[in-house]
Image (cartoon, rainbow, N blue to C red; front, side, top):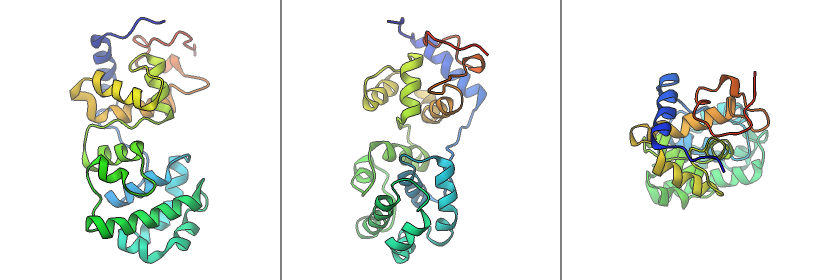
Length: 215
């Protein structure tokens, strides 16, 4: 087994991320917290690019729970039919919009418990909304972040939850707000699943991945 990363090494890694990209942003388009929530729900097993294409016209006419409910499930489905699992997602978007009206005065709640009670919202989705929409230092573990956490040695874990909890414990507090974005973007564009581009990796000197690739 590779030697675990030290706290000093993890600090160096996040300092490098911070210098490279001081204010990282997610790649989903949205106009308010409600449309952010919808976009994240739609992004499950779909690309951000694909979601953005589908939601451009949708959010132009339905950027509140009331407008989404008025639009109706059938029309929502037509707008998002290019996205995977679009039938279930259209149903969830309609139902969560109705629940926001009925239980939350049309406002997106800012707690994980309340978010996870909404149709189509799991822990990962809730964490993204809490982080981007409300500025909370949460970690949303997708396939990219799970890979980076394990491959680099920053936060090894056998499950997404294990990686999330390890990151919350090991990432320096002053870097925690942006850690989610840095790690996901790193996994998406540099530390790729099949061919990691280690030759241009800004954290390669600390990474524990034994099979580093050359340029």
